Structures are given as structure tokens and as C-alpha cells.
Image 1 (cartoon, helix red, strand yellow):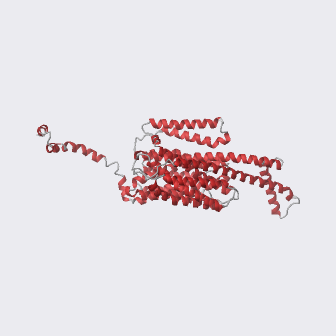
Image 2 (cartoon, helix red, strand yellow):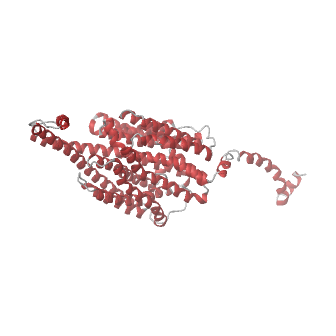
Length: 571
């Protein structure tokens, strides 16, 4: 009966319509039950827990990982003294951590999908606490560097996974408020890090800056188990081993070449080989990512010039930010005798200024686009860095504080518009890959820039000491710096012994005074050489930032286009 009217009444809709639902309906029933099971586990947990509470759990873990980057900088001189490390060696405590972060960020996205975001987050918190405990137990510079790399692996996973979970847990209409809270956590950590670290270093013990992460990690993991959804990950998600090996080898080779170039010689075979291996591995990484079915990072996002330009500018900002955060504390503590806590207090206002201006810069971006806040901000940053070229052993702390705050205005104005403008230039379906490249650029630019600046600092400092040593050799009969130091040490001991006995040996003062005077001269020469080298470093950084001002003119001007991707990317 159904075939007769269908063949005869081909133009009648009423005859055909009733006959199709019975055929289509069975086909739709298997699809309907198949869709709900996948997302089913997540909604009950997130619906029973207010999103603001889940967000606070995520911000806590993210805050801990970001805090560790800045809190360690203040403790660098104390570690250097306890371990007896050189400036080149101690900079690896920060550089190794930053480099490991840059390498692990691309793998973090895969790990989050494979294990499930919630499970990966909990595991990373526990691992970060364990890595921090190992750092607190380090017995020499080599063990500290190794433990910092171990700590950096979960430290790089936490921010990436946390940001991904924010977009899945928070309602679409509340994402702006959520990202504001998330962003404040990112800014507050660098602000409070130097001060908190300085207090612990000066009045307690520098090892506590690591041990403090252990209870926070445990409590954060417990809170995550209670208030975060923990869905299972996707099985069968392939890991791009070749791509990971290529980018890890390339970045490590380049960093090692930059770090050891001064001591090995920039034209020596080891350094040239490292540069060659690094460049070839990064080129191989691009080829691999273009060929594999499931790339670790989608390198095709670089065809958007606005995005590529933003990464260059982010690299400039990262070098300027972390270079100052590393070298200024060294300057204050080694040449001016400022305590760790006082150093943190001096650096605190600049971080507060950045924290206040970054949300404001976001509103400016919404109205005017990224070009003008980036141009103005980078110009202020370049001028402020140029003002640091006149640092000396007698520089005023007040003047230095105001200069750093002035630089922070530029950093706060430029950073968020540049980051957001670059991501907005990428199609929504490629935002995840673009965000990963954004994180990699920040981490690796900071690490490689710090290595290059340290190499330059060491070169200039060695030249200054050589010149000063020549003059001292003439005036002191050729006594070496080491000899002066040893003699002065013995003289100090003898002087202390005579002082303890309550009397001085006849003629003792006349015999020791030249040694002590010579030692003081040598110490002052070291401080002067370091300061002069640091001034040259600030000039190079200012010029580099000036180049960034030119590139900023190529950013988009005008209101941001409406896209489905996130407007803010985690720093």
C-alpha cells in the first residue's frame, strides 16, 4: 500500500512525508544515545559546583607555578654563595627551568587530552610539589639544575591545562569575568614573588621558597579532586615523538651554544656545531609538523603575519622583562649590598603597576586595537631601559624604583594588546595551536635571551676586569686578584686575632694595611666592572626594544573583530 501512492503521487508532499519518518526514525535513535555518554560525566560535577569555586582551584595551581619563576630570582645570589657557583653557572637555575617549560608546553596539550584535563591537572600539582621538595634538598649547583628541570615539567603543564579547563567549566556569558580573575592571578604572582622570596631568603632560609610549594600542591590536589570534573581522556591519541624530539633538541642546542659561547669561543667547533644542530632540528620540526597527521603544533598559523609579528614582539617583551628580573636583583645585592627582602620590596611597585595597567590595556585594545597601545608601551619601555644605562655602585634606590615603575607602564600597556591582537588574527579553529606557540615563545625567548645577555655580560665584565687588572698589576707589582684575595683573607684573620687579644702587634698595622687596601681596590674594581657591563646590557636591550617599536606599527589598528576564539592568552 505504501509503494503504490509513492510511485503514483510523486509530487504530493503529504503522501511522501508520512512514509519517511518510519525509515529515518530508527536511524536517528542510535545516534541520540551515542552522543550523551561522552559529555555526561562532566556536567554533573560542574553543575553541582559553582564555576567560581572551580576557577579558584585552577587559579591556585596556576599561581603556584608562575610564582616559582619570580620567587627564585631573589634567592639566586644566596644560592650562588652557598653552592660556590659562578654567574654563568647560577643563571642555569633560571634558564634550565624556563627552557624546560618551553619544551613541555607543546606536549601539555596532548597530555591533557590523553589523560583528561582534570586528571592531568591533579597529577601535575602533585608532581610539582615533589619537584619543589627535591629543589629544597639540593646539595650543589648540578643537583639544583637537575631538580629544577624535573620541577619545570609539571610547572609547564599546570598553566596550559588550567586555561583549557577555564573555557570548559565557565559559562560562555561569564568568560570575560572569569578571565579577568584568571589574569589577576598571573599578574599578582610575579608581584608578590620577589617580596615573599626576599623575606624567606633574608630572615628564614632560601630553601623554604621551594618547600612552601609542597603543602600548597597537596591541598590544591585535594581541592581539585573534590571540586573539578575528572573525565577520562581520549584513548588512541598519538604522540608526535619525532616532532617533540626535534623541537627539544633544537631548543636545547641553541641555548647551550648561547650560554657557553663566551667560555668556549663563539667561533669554536662545539659552539658552531650546536648552532647548526639547533637550526637543523628546528627546521626538521617544521617539516615533520607539516607532514604528520596529528602534529604537536600546527605550524601553518605562521602564514598569518599579524600573529607572527606578535610572537616577535612577545619575544622582545620577554627578554626585557626577565632580563631585568634576573640582573637587577644581582646588581642590588652584589654591588650595593641590599638585602634580599629589601630587593623584593624595591621590585614590588613595578609589578603592581603592571598588574593595574594590564586590565586597562585590555579595554584600550577593545576600542583602538593593538597598534597604538603597543607602540606607546614599547616606546616607554625602550626609554625606561635606556635610562638604566647609567647605573653605578652609588645609584639611588629611589631613582631606580621610579625608573622600573616607568618601564612597567610600558610593559603593562604593550603586553596584553600584542598577545590578544596576535591570537585574534588566527581563525577560531586554530586558536589552540596559536596559544601553544604563544606560550612556547614566551618561555624560550626568556630562556635564550637570558643566556645571550649573560654571555654578553660575562664578556664585557671580563674585559673590564682585564683592563683594571693591568692597571692594578702595575701599581701592585703584579699581584693577581686571587693572591690579593688570599692575602687579604689572611690579613683579616690576623687582624681579627689581634683585635680579639685586645692589642695590636707593633708594626702589624703598617704591614697589613697595603694588603687590605689592595683587596678593597680589587673588590671595588669587580663591582665597577659588573656595573659597566650591566650598563652595556641595558643599551642592547633598549635598542632591541626600539626595533620592536617599528614592528608594532604593523599591528592592526581599530576595534577587534568578533571571533569565537579566546581573547586572552595565558602568559
